[in-house]
Length: 302
Image 1: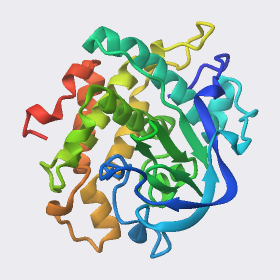
Image 2: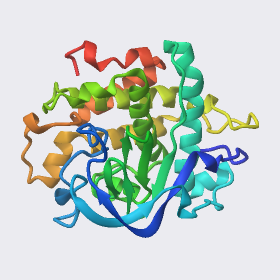
Image 3: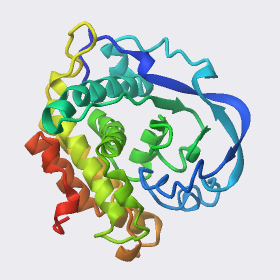
Image 4: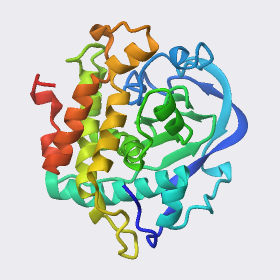
């Protein structure tokens, strides 16, 4: 999905990851076992990085992050910038997703949306939920209500997991993480803390709900506007939808296990759902256009 070139990007909705050394105490505060429920891939970082990843629940020397990191994103001013640059595309998507939910939540479910910043970093940074890195993938941290993403993950999504590299494949990633923020606002996120795994587990239902919410946003994305009333995104094409579906399939538990685990699929260990289920729930949100279609906890037909 392309951005309208004349749309203005609001960089105040994001912040940069820093480069100063710091000590991250994994797990953050107060028994937050939910911290990696929202991790986009949700598998052992050692599998992704051939043993070179970091464990977000251990103590690691990582790069620091935060609002004082000094990143201003001066290269990201317009929709034209979002069309050519992955970092700017993240910013434009954040703008669009938040503009949509700010209006939709009060209208659909009588709840007020509260803004959530995205931390765009390179390599690794700290979060209250542990280490953020491109080994763990993008994730939402409920304790500070921020999304953490390294733009280089998009290269991994295409080269390692097989997404097609289209714009909506990348935008789907951002919209999925903001789906977790909406779940947090609505009180669903805690349901992913049941400690179980498998295709019917609470964690899988949380992830599929976020996929559905990403689809809901996609349905309305071309109606979202910047602060001056300029439309942010152009209407979706069939190719855009196929691009999003390729990303949803790429991060299905079965696909990841097949491609990185020697071809063995163990449903009992699933935390995010199959490729088919992830595509199904994205389409459920896209075709319905309403968050009311995303209640994955009221059905066993996942």
